[in-house]
Length: 453
Image (cartoon, rainbow, N blue to C red; front, side, top):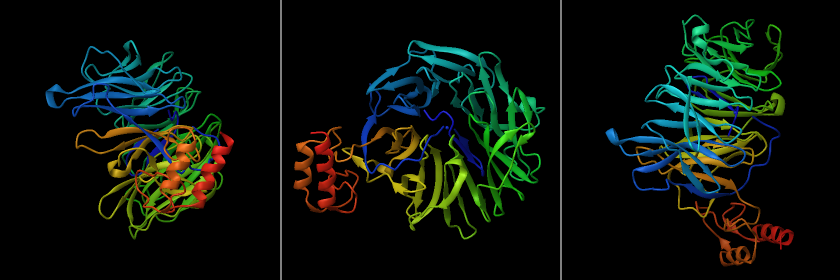
């Protein structure tokens, strides 16, 4: 699970994430399709969360119209467990540290705690189809949003909706929470011209960036009480003006702002993500409709703009992992969607041609979540109702066939494919993806084989 990744779509949407050090991107991934245990055309799994133990939760979808049902599921080590429920519309959204989950029951408007035996209501209220649980901390805090109206739940305090604390005047979007229960977010989120960053600390609401004029938004908070804030003196929407992004420690009266980690002179549709190491990434459009993306090193240092393939027209960020790997989607002129991963040092890598042993995954596998080992949940083959989903995990160096071992079979497969080869979704022996199976690929297999004979 990404416990505290925070995505703030400055133009409108958001989700959730934590971190350590930026790691090199894996070249290739082994694919495991996530399929309903009773799978057919109307039964699919819709995963929401992947944790560092490799566990997945979400809901199992069945049927259409009046026959539609949803029930939570847990997946681990290739085994899917469907959770028995007494109603027809329940979803698991986020895993807890003990492998249980939290989600919603839309039939009775409640937040639910879920284990393999069933579900238990923990809070009731206006929790329905527009409600999503985005974070579950190791200390038991559950954070979510009903559309853009944020709330937090903990066994010790019950459920708290932030807009009611602000006088019920405007929705207060909840972006992130740390283990002490401190929440960062944005009050009056839908007003791009006057929205303000919001901090809920010790069960009190404050503006952490009161000295900044114009619009501000709260992006992320870590366990060191460092916050990531975005500031647009002339407003976020429709954008086009100067945007500053800060990484700042919290003092007694709010964020202690220094120099911005990144200043963008002209930004439309800005999105910003951050993790607990202070790795920050963001994407936007210029006035010429060109797409841009930047990433920093840990601590919000050395902001670098990454090269985007020239034929891409749109970009969205979906998350950032514990190790500082951003992921999202790109769209080309033919409206084809490409999933990608990116780090500051390795740049952007498209996922479609890096998937071993799978059938070609239509729409190139767009990521939903990633864990600290670089494994990801991806969506593929959209069927106009619910996409199909897969787990992809970094392949071993030299593992040609994705079997999890490097042996004589890998050597024989490589030799049989020697010479120019198309870089296609089946990946195969072209380990460095340069369009040729040659000496470099052979050396990678031999090195791995010698280390693990």
